[in-house]
Image (cartoon, rainbow, N blue to C red; front, side):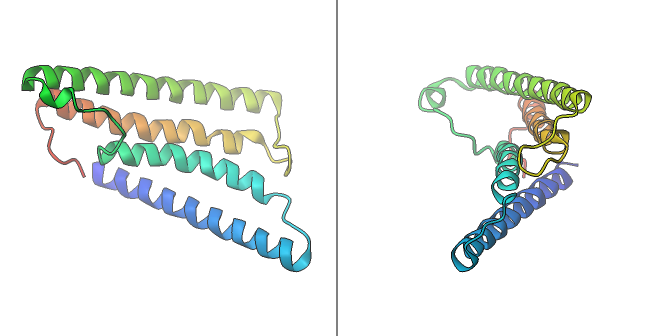
Length: 158
């Protein structure tokens, strides 16, 4: 399950980067060669950046690559270090689950009010759904880390 989830995260990140890069490159070429730009490119790139950031956060959690100040934590006894890590992962899981919950609420509100994007006039919920999707992946990754810490399986979770 973890392996499949990791592959899905990696594929989503790669697709976002490829589309963002291609769209931005095409827009620059169009602007300088044809003196016209794609009106939708900035909007799509911004939304994809949100998805990339959230899914990238989940991938970083899976790789245990989130920034952290461990100088003090590394000096603590193993039991206390494990307790602090457990609390940290529990809080991260709670925070990302709250983001997931409020993201769903945001999408429901966007649907209810019929909100559309500024440039393309597409339903806002399509892109708003990137928040709960990304938060779901983050929650799952931190939950795995929490379970590993509590069970004592803090090895490499790749």
